[in-house]
Length: 135
Image (cartoon, rainbow, N blue to C red; front, top):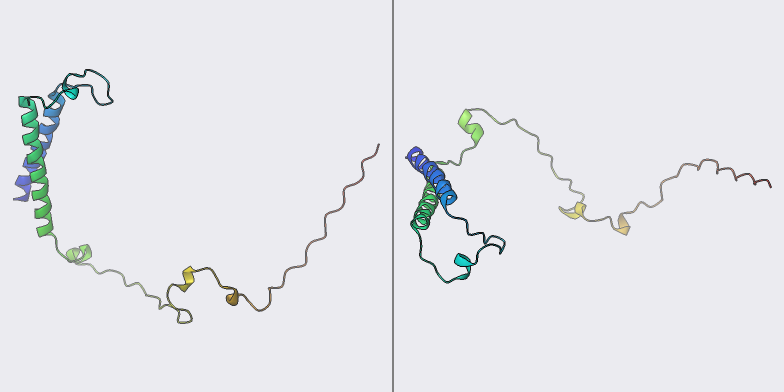
């Protein structure tokens, strides 16, 4: 059933593209061109416009039908289960208990600062002063 609807869907899509390409361009895409069909009231629908509407409705109907058929055919099982394999077990790390969840996303508070600043390395010798320029 799904293959039949898919074949109809593809044929309708190709026909829809062909019918749209056969229609006369009115040149009103950017507000340019003739003002005949775009500026007047509701015009008389031509045969190509009627065929385009029919193909568009059929295209949407087959799209919805394919979606429903795919949803019915889907299962809740994993793709790995369909192949008969097993997923590798990954060890799950337990969250640390010293802080509640979500606090690690916040910036550290002043109370979290260490009691003494870390010992800094002795700075290197200061750069030598530049030699005075001679006149």
